[in-house]
Length: 309
Image (cartoon, rainbow, N blue to C red; front, side, top):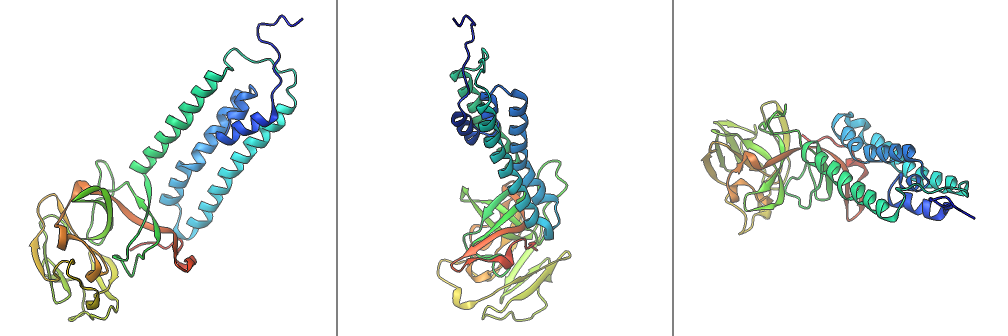
């Protein structure tokens, strides 16, 4: 007769496998291997969230895609290894004696803490303070950024203690002045106190023209602009001007605590010419590079890993 307070409860391989499918390390916990469960969960959590952030922020652009692929492969490897290991170990635990803490309630609590608190908190911290991914839905930043590009935005930017402050020429992610739930991507043209003038498809900042071309072509031919050591291309296409777009002629001084934003596709961009200057507090990150891009014709392989200027 079985007199042990904790009776023998053979582990079921299928249950161990399914638990590890739901959460890496969960099946090992079911098998009573707490140490392995912790390490598998930590490896999965690090590779899937901070690991990708490290790749996006510190790996040279030419190595970004291979390193991202490696990070994803390692993440999946940890996940699948956890499932296989849990299934294999459970097969050899026919005489397993359940611990006092191995109850359905404790399993549910651990799952809620890991999946409902720990992982979301880790993801939220990385997205808030390190790097975040954004998909560009419009062509307002052509030709440098096209619709369908998915970019990494550096969030270590324009914040207390951050080494990166806003600069003219930066491509910034910011909250819409009229709807903070909507994000825009534009180029910072003017800083607080700068005088901005736009006339005849030419932009001046504090009296200096951004382009050396006297009359920028209205047929959409790219024109090079530059300021403070940064250089990029813009398009002015008269046929894209519509009634709901802002006037192309403007003269204004940027107020304190504000920045002036323009899209690179000048006649097809909703920017500071329409909604005014943007508060520095609403500038959330700097566009760093494209990690994926797709359009009607499929994946644009030539754009993957492209550094943004």
